[in-house]
Image 1 (cartoon, rainbow, N blue to C red):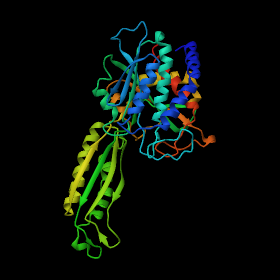
Image 2 (cartoon, rainbow, N blue to C red; image 1 turned 30 degrees about the horizontal axis):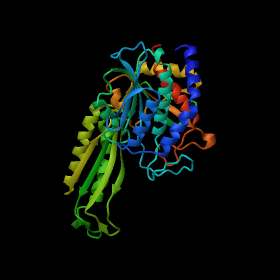
Image 3 (tube, one colour; image 1 turned 45 degrees about the vertical axis):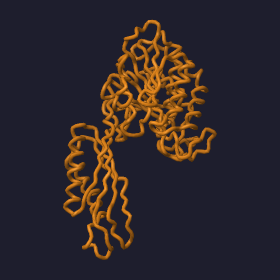
Image 4 (spheres, helix red, strand yellow; image 1 turned 180 degrees about the horizontal axis):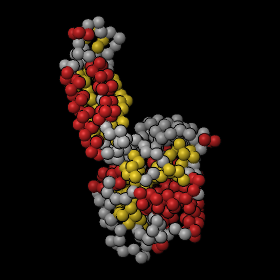
Length: 398
């Protein structure tokens, strides 16, 4: 991409920065939970209509898909996909800002308001540049990233990767640990698969002074939590990233009461699909064996979540080069592997993708809280950079 094109993208992105900030503040104040993004869908549709961009709503339930074509693009010409997610989280916001969430207990604490606003801004810039685009651009506003089965599965089911066919796909995600003005990339394996473990252990309750007359579900649960770590430490190839964590253990007993049941919940994450399948079988076998050998019974649900996310090396290298031209090499970081999960991974199983990070933090202004935190916020100047990056993704071959 030549210098004139870079300067044009910067100029057009700057021209709409106030509008994009207004989008973000409106969306932040009006968050909606996964698969309930009806008003957000209408807002996006209205803005695309104002821009004269052909689009369809109710894709994947509450998603919106638009297409930008230039005069030189044929109807069946393959396209570039740009994706943003729409949903918020069940968190009570603690920020004291004019655009604080109006919905008690619901907050855009993962930056999806940023992603959507940036893509709307990019849509306006790309629409004005449509006759210069090497390929048509498909705009994908996706619901339900935060909740299984993942809105990406619903969008794919409804044909978002087809008609016209997407040949490359891009998405960004806010990264409050990174200072504003910077972006980050990782080629290849980047984020983990994510499965949920929900278990209820049934024993036999009784008095704490007579444990020999009971079947203690707390003791059984404790053995499960510790013993299952052997699956990670002794069954998994050390070269394969893998983690098994239990974050919920509940038993309604008392100091002198052994309860009749206990509930545990955990997450299993890895970056190898063959090992993932094997490990989930081992988890089920081990849990069942531990409970049965102690005389209890087990009710187990393993909810299979998102696959691992793998960035296409060539696509990511190209996007990183553009970022260096836009922001300077000193503001482009190489990122480590993460064992967090993201349903953009479903697209990565189908087409070459680049999922990258947008720095939104500002330690001097106290913008330091991570995603999923009730005080999460961003430095608004990151919005302009996000627009520049998403617009530039459409020009990789130019």
